[in-house]
Image (cartoon, rainbow, N blue to C red; front, side, top):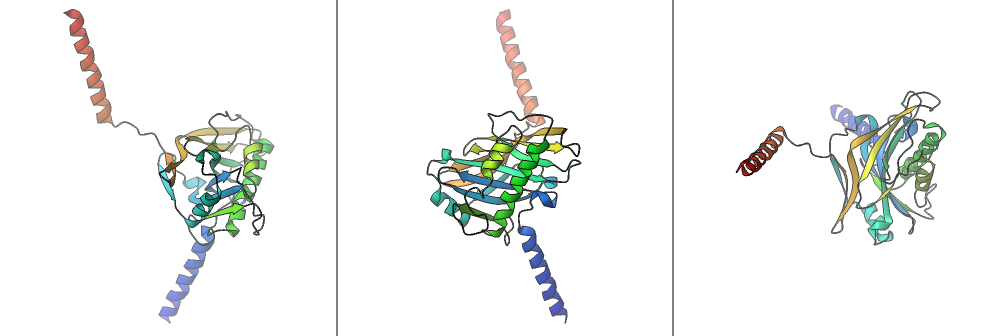
Length: 256
């Protein structure tokens, strides 16, 4: 009897783990960050669940994800061999803010997002993100693996399955004055937008200290969130002492 209870508990735990492995999309509240990569020319995209809900994201901690699963290999087999043709974005959103809108997104470094209102554009962004995160849950191994992944091409038989799943172009074009993507090998700023009222006419935005990037090193790809290193106190003191010594030497030379 005791063994049966243990087995039953294990099955419940396993089923719970599987259900929690799926990407948590905006409608659920406290959404989850996902990495999306796409090649517009070859019409193929890749989605990876980063396993971090917005409330749990620590902007002061660097992160690194090796992109080595079979779905990423399938994505690369179709995508352009010129990595500058591949774009990436890290996005997440939810409806837990006072106005029902919260967005975390990478930013095209050439674009200055609008400040203030999120309004209808934010609704469009979250709606497109909802679809872009829900569709992969029926593809790949999102439903069974923590930090699952998938890829999609035009004509996939899965519901809504096609390049960009199919919403990355919409995320690019309907957001409030920004675009989400940057090409592989570039650093991408990361911002949050928080609605302050139910109409979405007031919002705050914050630029996190870290930068997202996807790096190709000899055919090995990693997605990184990198926080700038803060010099330690001893290092600062030594640097100041060095500058002081140089200044003293210069002073003595002028005196002589």
